[in-house]
Image (cartoon, rainbow, N blue to C red):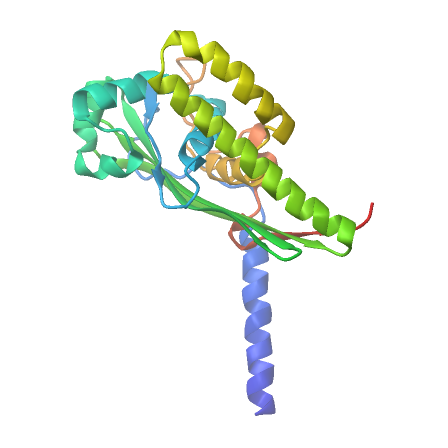
Length: 275
């Protein structure tokens, strides 16, 4: 029995070391397509939302667009992508994309590559004075002419917050409620602006925008979302950037050097007290 416990303990230590070693060193681009050559222009498609947060697809898509651009890719304007998909393929949601071949999507968008995204988890769980934040995302880049997957990666990050006082608990609960309200306000403003005419836009922006300012505009999952997006971004093959002669690089760029750890197994814990 004692021998079994010692063996189990050793196995646990080995697994822990493997996780640590896996995070050491720089992450390298993942090349799934032989003879890879960076596409000149790509389309960031609507993301498939598997979470319960209705605002997640728009929010995550905007952040990942910045990540893609930092890797040297020219991204087709999102509004243009959405308008074409709606008009020519009747696609308004990321979950509908699997019903259409990548080659057809690429043809109607006139791009060389497509980026798909899956929001696997995007949640805030508040239980008493404890709060758990989780962001788990998966992305892939597909050749728009052949349908072949060029690159694919997935990452997850989590944060736990525990209040040790009444004041700290109030901060946890108050911040959660205020920022959720801000998210609902933003989504409401976007939906109204899409359906109403120009005359109502200024009115909605002034009234609802004021409420959003009061509630606080920064999304409570922004930090984790940026971390996960850039962790995945560290393995995206380099694009052409501003230089048409730029060749694919086997090294991560300086923007992503701080994201070389394997965050799939990393959970941060914060303690909130009276201060």
